[in-house]
Amino acid sequence: MKVVTVEAAEVDERLERLAAAALWADADDAALLVRRLAAPPPGREWTVLAVPAPDAGPQGAVFVSIGADGAGHVDLIAVDPAARSRGIGRALVAAAEEWMRAKGATEARFAGNAPCYAWPGIDVRYTPAACLAESLGYERYRVAWNMTADLPARYDEAGHEADLARLDAAGVTVAAAPAGERSGVVAFVREQWNDAWAWEAEQATGLHYAARDGEILGFAAWGARPLWFGPMGTAEAARGLGVGRVLLRRCLAEQAAAGLTSAQIGWVGPLRFYSRAVAARAERVFWLYRRHLG
Figure 1: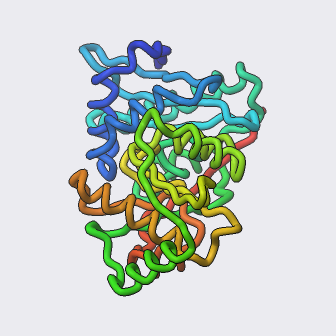
Figure 2: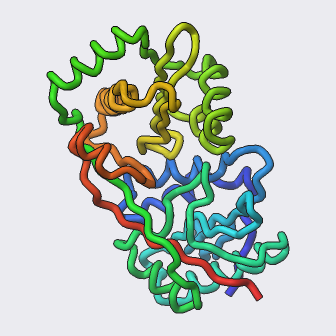
């Protein structure tokens, strides 16, 4: 089966339509995912491979990249529903693995290549993708999950007012950081956490932060991974004041104002925090797979 390389300049609406048709659980933001993966951080090695159709668009495509640790990642794989059961998925993965080997990778993963990723792993609802990975010898090595918050967010108003009063009494202010005016927040995120989160903060649709006497204490972002909330963090010196809850709610309010009726909180760690802060519930589950490349 013929698999061709799609040049970066050719990642266009044809791939967006393919993704929207194949990714039924993400149809609303499939085009945004294609655009996001086609604009990764500087220095990332990545490519798109496709099985062409006789007419206009591809029958299937796979986005592949190399992670900071040298592992290869299948970032997104999509096969036209009308062309399934023809071996297209297997051909795409085989071509992706060959590209990874050529780049020096010794391990292939169906796992998110943060900070520019589509999902943490394979959404368990995309059962054919999980079956494909397992049939090709990939092992499931980790589980990740998202939480869902209904919008407008649900929380105790009195408790929120108490959080705001506590911040005010401590001399902490909160504000939005518009695009083009984020250097201070991005530098704070890089210093406190890592380059990956700093890139996400810079790329985010919405970015909010807390500060005291000119010192940034915490941040929260949404839209770096299209439409999802995250990342978020609070400096150790400011924990216990309610900074995280206030910034989270500001982001969710902005997402609601943008017309979203729910927010995905991606790749969640602290279940209890989000459950208590905005009545979020664990919902999407992802299996992460890997295989040694011999």
